[in-house]
Figure 1 (tube, rainbow, N blue to C red):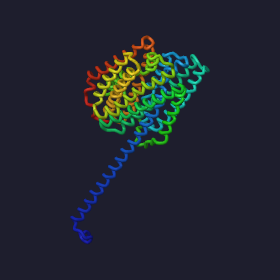
Figure 2: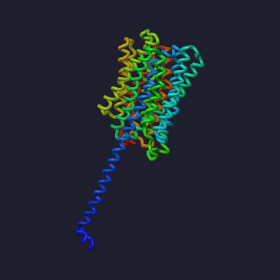
Figure 3: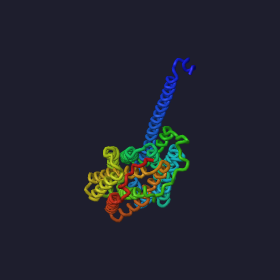
Figure 4: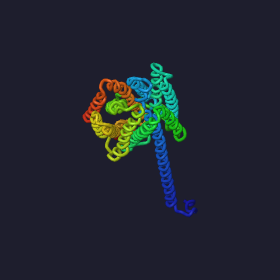
Length: 443
């Protein structure tokens, strides 16, 4: 007591000073923690931006090929079913490898996964460009040409592409905590794909005006650009941010399978019509190969515009829950399919695919965000891979089936696609899994 008084303060005052200092230190620590948390959040958002840029550039590369793949197949002497089978093999590789990539993105980290995937994709599409040149000049033809198409564009490129979306979706799930932010984040992934489809359609269509092969040559260039962006700008996660053993998610999990069924139906319908759009343009309008590439690029551009409009305007402004997005999107896309049945010229065809784009663009964030809101953090990579595998599974069957059905009757892929979308709409309206609240845990 005397010591306290010698220091110029009574004992209770000294205690108050000590308590005040402790409170100040606690407040300072809380402020520092808050600042660190804010910085971490800003850092995560910046990394999300880099991942979305990688998605955009990768799918620009893929989409640049879309307007020319149908006329290219005819130019090198391949049948419709052969190019459909090539795309289906790529999709099969997505099915087989997506969940492994999704889990790897959590255990190895996003940067190593994307660097490996984009490097392999660039090499494979460089090989595809070389094979295409040999096919056009006649140096390769028949079974050897077809086999190389399947290997480089199907097996190798499909396995590499499978890494991109699961990695992006796991990144979004890790950086968001609420239903609204999760839906907006997944819409961002879809918007990046949609913008890429617009850019790819413009670039592929424009370059095909010079030559179909110029469009093909551009694909590996874009993939190399994506690789450089990831290598230079994406930060490697710390060991503590990684998950050593990410959980495997079963497709039979009741939290997940209703969304997978809806997504499978939706993307199967899209795949049926997407692969035959070039044939529809060429056969309905009576165009040569180069002009078909240009006009098909315009049609795919319209679909991309519709998708981006949905994901950048309709989804954020509506603030609809995932099941509502699925219902509205399936209905809108089904209307677009119905309109596409009518052969009413170029303007009607473009309007139809634009409406399909709006519908799919509205439904997609509901499909991808809905199940993530029910999963824990260590399940997000496996779930993202499972969603990627489901999407890929639709393209295992749809391109081959679509081109086969088109050979039987050009209207058949459209009719069956419309029926699938109506089925999705009925399922989402009727199944109890879409009526339960989803925002109980944002992983």
